[in-house]
Amino acid sequence: MIGSGKIPLAAAVALAVLLGIGPSGGGVVSGFHGDRVPLSHPEDPAPPPRPVEDPAPVVYLTFDDGPHPVYTPQVLEVLASYEIKATFFVVGDMVRRWPDAARQIVAEGHSIQSHAWNHDTLTEFDRREFIRDMNRTQTELLYATKTQATCLRPPYGATNSKVEKWANELGLTIELWDASGADWTDISAEGIARRVLRRVAPGSVVLLHDGGGPRSRTVSALDIIIPTLLEDGYRFGLLCRTNPLSVEPAVCAFSLAWPRGGLVAVTPCGTFNSVWPWREGPNPSS
Ligand SMILES: [Zn+2]
Image (cartoon, rainbow, N blue to C red; front, side, top):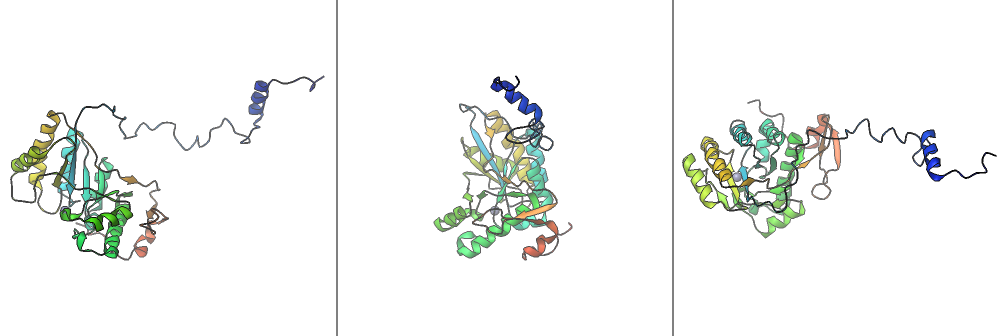
């Protein structure tokens, strides 16, 4: 008589699957998110993790005062030719003027970080002014590149315990440098390279500039600095991670509750200018 015998558990489970019965209802096999999330990401730009015992010393190239419509792409071209990455500390108001250059930095896998809104001396700010300055810069970064800085390089390296505390409250780590090329002074490309190479040690942070003045000598110096360091066995690291935003291109995200809450709102881009009164009008066309 059917029903009097016991059905083995495995058979029961198999039957349930065939009939579409189960804890999640029907469609057990059809794939959760299977039609939307690819199983693999062949274009994933992240490199495989390096072995812990990797003996290669690391050096961090950093570029301040950009983005610049001429020199930033030139720096990026040199970096791409050696297949290395760097960290760019950008000025918020320059990102507003030259968003394409900022986007190129991110698109090519480099790290983009904050160098304040207008290169002011942050130690002269009170807390309110500091937060406003950081907010404006982060907002511009979000608007232009859909990323958010995690590091702050104070202009002129001017910092103190007060600035550090405020920065930390906003989730920003202060990053300075130990190997400057002094490329804002009137020295040759060879002089810039010599200065950097004399100072570099494992773990060094190199300071150069892609904005704030003519930077052709800096671009030329890179063609001395990078191959020399590669020959010495250095690898090039990213100093700060960039927080990417996973938002659709059709919307803009911003952090209304910054510094406390991070991202709290997503809005159609068309409403963005009216939300942020300090974005004064469209970007200059040249
Ligand atoms: Zn600077």
